[in-house]
Image 1 (cartoon, rainbow, N blue to C red):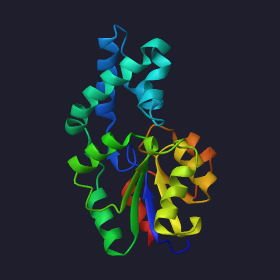
Image 2: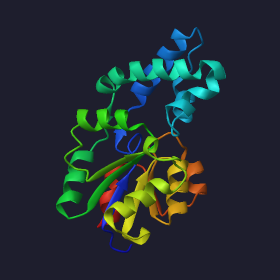
Image 3: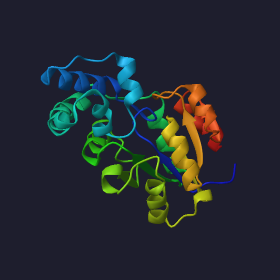
Image 4: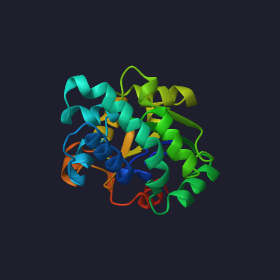
Length: 213
């Protein structure tokens, strides 16, 4: 692998396990609307394109706006209780930072909630830039989020590596021309990920150190 100057990470499912918080907030919202809750796996599979798209398939169009408000109000609290780092993330990010890499987050999660996670888990000291889809016209899999980060660092696509956990991340990296590693700790299956032909597929985020070295 060519030497990289920047490492760009998705957040949920890649560095952080926030699925318990998402599931709690989702089913709380359903209860408040008088709708049935959903199994954990169904909710996991719906994650990835922001909270509006998470809720949309399960409710009437007229209920979407109040549903998002209910979800976000609950989620501000649940994220602080039910989100944890995957094993080895702290040490890995510290090492990459000390080696001179620019580190960034590219997430479809709204900025407010991404920053709740980042602050709560002490990740803010590692990242040079955090960009979320609510600051863009289009979120992932549109490549603009990666292109914007590359411009921020004055880098070409070949100078960065993108790390995500879903099919949507593999598609984003491909469209941006950025070499992409997918870790199988998110909501996409390994077979779904492999069909997108990312540069590497790993089972744990700590395996990234082997690839980088």
